[in-house]
Amino acid sequence: SYELTQPPSVSVSPGQTARISCSADALPKQYAYWYQQKPGQAPVLVIYKDGGRPSGIPERFSGSSSGTTVTLTISGVQAEDEADYYCQSADSSGTYVFGTGTKVTVL
Amino acid sequence: QVTLRESGPALVKPTQTLTLTCTFSGFSLSTSGMCVSWIRQPPGKALEWLARIDWDDDKYYSTSLKTRLTISKDTSKNQVVLTMTNMDPVDTATYYCARMGYSGYDDFDYWGQGTLVTVSS
Image (tube, rainbow over all chains, first blue to last red; front, side, top):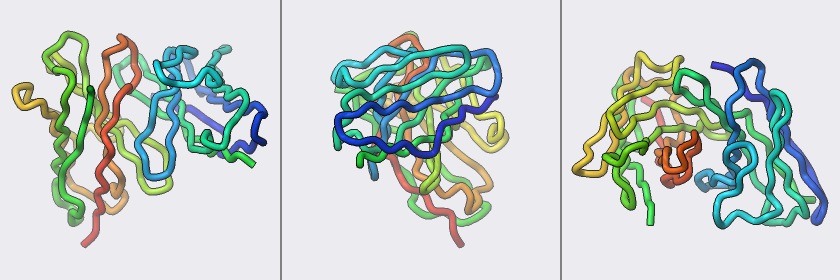
């Protein structure tokens, strides 16, 4: 399997835009998914298939892909968006990998 | 309404075998395409995928842990069971089960609340 690398932390002021990258160290690239995890809680899916947004997820969450890097963008960050974020993908053998995780701090 | 709930021992001793049960509702593992996975998270660390079982009983395991893991299902009880042998303190983690397959893609769309397992003598 391969690794997904994320920046350990991202800090952003309320109302600004946070961008979290997730880079794969090898091909093939599959679709990427993003999860938000608040302290003491289970992860919540916020982006599927690189850029899809599940029902109930605010429009300020969006995802994009370029080459072997995917990016989660949170536009107009709110205090409630402070959390850990994980990317996730699959490899061709039916196994899955999570990214190293990014802590988003709202200043 | 889809729910999943993990259950099992909170404390196991080194070398023992861990058995965890995921009891779910709101979907059926006999439905084509449905899957359930187990994922764990050591305190303060990242998520790690462990195993997956499909509606047709296909099974997939983490490459690094496959010799220690067994996943099974009881469709009539809406349960998925994970066993992990030869437990070590580094296996201390919160263990989650999660549903997959509803979207047709590789996302985990519903998660249980997790159960913390501590490995200590």
